[in-house]
Length: 244
Image (cartoon, rainbow, N blue to C red):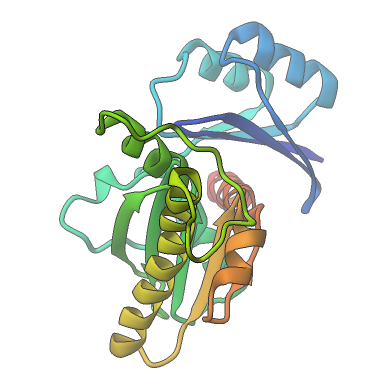
């Protein structure tokens, strides 16, 4: 059985294919048009689909997915194997819900901190009672590069270069070191703060740049670039089973 897991973020529209329980592939959609979604359906012939979206996407694609597959749209109203005892649970991003469900599915009855590297960095803590008790949000790497250029008169927009020096020798390398090394130290620092409050927990890192940032961190982590998709698949299965 094939399941489509759509992840619509602020930067890209992505989709992952699961065949039975196995992650098969990931690709980027050109748009959120009905034609694009129908093309994906025709190619993969899915039985089920799930959508996580943090943007104002084309609502017509939900109708297409509901007509052609057993469809679920992720929201706080979804049936989840976690609870969220926070002030305004309906404001929690769908992507964050998917990440915490993924780690609960893999590491049940344990404290887990999930760090997502995307447009923003999100820190998401779910305790051993499967309660998503909150976290924090800070600017992601691209946002940091762009903000330095946007909010100053003369600083340029700099692209990432992982071979940055610790001591920048020009404007470009100063910015690269400040952004990339600064992010790495921020992540390590947040993990250390959690260690002061929780004696034992797993740390998970996900997002497109986890290979590089994982190597820059001093803390031990589990790195998994497909974590959100695995959470979406688990949620899809969980909600399907609740209907039967």
